[in-house]
Amino acid sequence: MATHAMGHHHPAFSVSARWLLLGFVSGALSVLLFHQGAAALLHALELTPRAPYSMAATAPFGIPQLWSIALWGGVWGVLLAAALVRLRGAALIAAAVVFGAVLPTLVAWFVVAPLKGQPVAAGFVPAAMLIGPIVNAAWGLGTGIGLALVGRSRRA
Image (cartoon, rainbow, N blue to C red; front, side, top):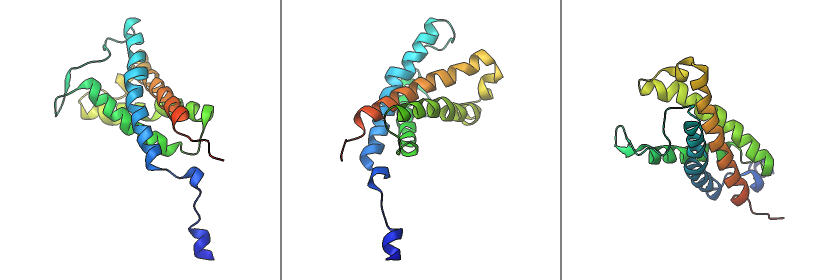
């Protein structure tokens, strides 16, 4: 009986392959629509010099920047889906916005930037520092919406 209790499984909170795949797809699509859409708005407002939807080659494989970001958006989408598997609806979307604003931004500032020879945390220039959390929160919003709309079946 003790082994049965230890092996008890809560299907409502398990991380299914379907949920993680949806996290990847939602995260990748959210880059194209929400992340780059926010970047386009910030660029149009002259708040950032970086143009959205860049097809410039990235090192080391020469993949266009947009597709590289979309791939990483998908990877982050899997992490987001795994982390927020217990949430639904508005709570999922709100948590996804916070997740996006914080976690990918911190990794970009303190891991990716140094690896690329760029200053950490956008050089601690406040206006430049705001760009990451804004575009990444937009990504989280899109990813959360995708997961909330398509991710859950309404089984009794």
